[in-house]
Every structure is written in C-alpha cells, then in structure tokens.
Length: 157
Image (cartoon, rainbow, N blue to C red; front, top):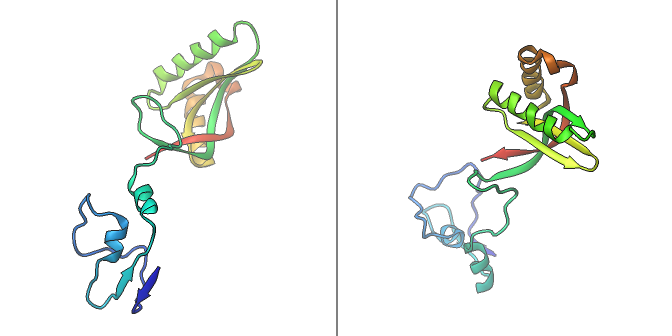
C-alpha cells in the first residue's frame, strides 16, 4: 500500500460523505478528500473478492437466534449430578429457573458421566454475583447448590 501525502487517521474519525452498501473498504480508502491526501491500495483481485464475500465462519449460531461471539465469562451452576435421574433433575430445575427468571438462559449439558445445568451469560463476576444473590433469595430450596463458575459465554451482538 502506498500513500501520497501524509495525514494521521484515527479509528474514531468519521467520513463526512455517506457510504453506500455498494462501497467496499478499498473504494472507501481510495476516496480523496481535500487536505487528507490520497490512499492507493494495490492488491490482487482474489483478495478483493475474499474481503467482499460474507464470512462463512460464525462464533456461534443457533437456529432463530442472534449471532453471538464466544468469550470468557461467568455462569451460575444450578445443578451437577451423575445419578440415573440426573437428566430429569437438570431439566426440572431448568424449568424452575425459567419460570422465576425468564430472561436468564439455561444451558443443560452432558459430559460423561455428569449432567450439568448452568444459567446466564455474565461478562463480569459482579454481574453473576448480583444474579446469584437474587436466585438464592427467590429459590431458597436450591440456594445451597448455587455458585458462580467461570465458563465460555455467548456475548450477543
């Protein structure tokens, strides 16, 4: 990439003219504006085609759900068991949590030999702790089994 003239650019700067959906990054970079110099981008056509094509990779996709990025965060573990009745118990507790906290997502998983129920997608320990206290207050019958665990969470965008 060669630049003629020099002017510092910052990520926070905005372009004064509208950018249409048909503009690609190379067109936007190549637009000239008085006092800002000229950017000339040289790249093979294959790169331009790759950049213009929508990504085929997604961090996480569920049918009918927003796309999400998987990041390190926290969840509240509600159940963990390896008895023959553990699957039913995990789903029963998920229903209980869903009725009491309809905005918190429940995740039932099986990793031999354990069935596990964790809830929530909390970016910080403090967020998880606030929900944990509320869950313990509203679900006293399982309060002793609730605790915060570090986990990969869905950060919806």
